[in-house]
Image 1 (cartoon, rainbow, N blue to C red):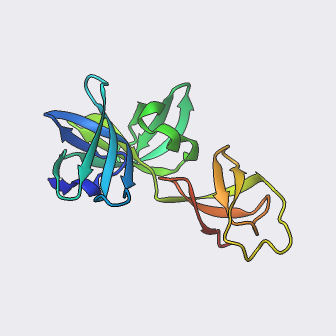
Image 2 (tube, rainbow, N blue to C red):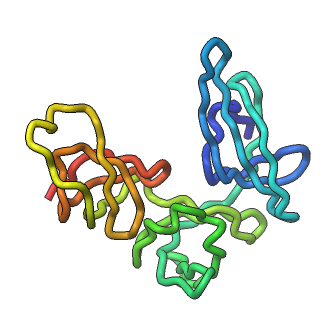
Length: 188
């Protein structure tokens, strides 16, 4: 399936120079007077070689045909993460490096989608958002609530995120996993 270069996202598997590569990082850039492009960091699945390249919206890239299966996250064993197939109850171990920084958001029994190519796991897609509790942040300063500035906070899983100044420790917020961005206050 062909996709536009600006539609490439982290976790996708694409064909690049005749090789299957998993996208490790995808950053959309719009430099001043130039056309927008997607800066992609990818890794060859077979050899582990990393590549960096730019793709414009007009470039077409072949996305590998993968089988997607729902799995539940169970636990971690050192550098390996253990998942269970929701239909067959088979367990599979996947290296934490395949998920990258997003592994901090994994919670027991969280449902994820694992992509397979010829029965080999290639990528793990976590839910779009998760609810986290703010573990520590700077105290709220009176009169700062109308400001559009954000302040740093550490979540219960140790991830650093920028939050609005009116939020305080112990509050639950919705976080977009892909880019660790604050979305909104969690509804109780």
